[in-house]
Amino acid sequence: MIEALERIVGKENVITDREKIENYLVDETPSIIRPKPAVKLVLVKPANTKEVSEILKFANENKIPVYPRGGGTGLAGGAIPTRDGIILSLERMDKIEIDKDNLMAIAEAGVTLEKLIKAAEEADLFFPLHPGDESAHVGGLVATNAGGARAVKYGVMRNYVRGLEVVLPTGEILNLGGKLQKNNMGYDLMNLIIGSEGTLAVITKVI
Image (cartoon, rainbow, N blue to C red; front, top):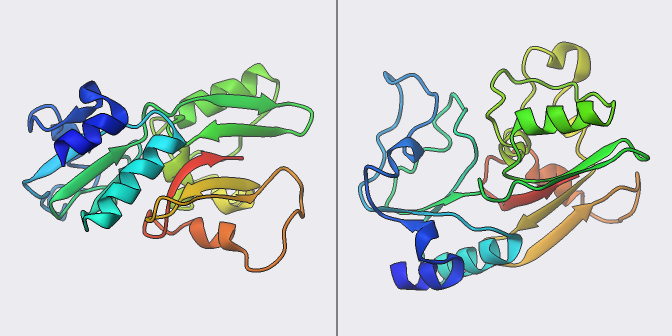
């Protein structure tokens, strides 16, 4: 398994040393109720959607559990790997583009809330949501449909997402929604993914 993953993302981005992955085994869930992480785990850090696709395809074919990992700021243990498998950290996928004309941001899943807020401010724009921890990743914010205290006034993440790029467990890449307010027909898969906590697909890009 290790060699196969190294061929996908490079040897330096596949980590098995327990001490080096210690911070990826927990989130901000209070220790008294925090689930216990599994023992046999490997941390993998893809750089792009293609690598995510190849990892998921490999894991699916070999029936290996995968745990998508964002900033680890959740309070419900959702990012804790409780079975032996792969921790999929999207931290290297941190590119962001601001489309000022359309008042939109195109951000990879590993972009932090802090980076998103700063990029918006530099374009004289304002991103209203603030779940409380700016080290949270955009992908995680969407996966949990985060809101925070400002949700009372501004709503939750679902209200601001216009499009998603996601990878299914089979490795298939889907582009859902987009910059246009209405550009598709049929079932609303985008809103099905939002708030699904990583159970249906891995979010790789958000509009």
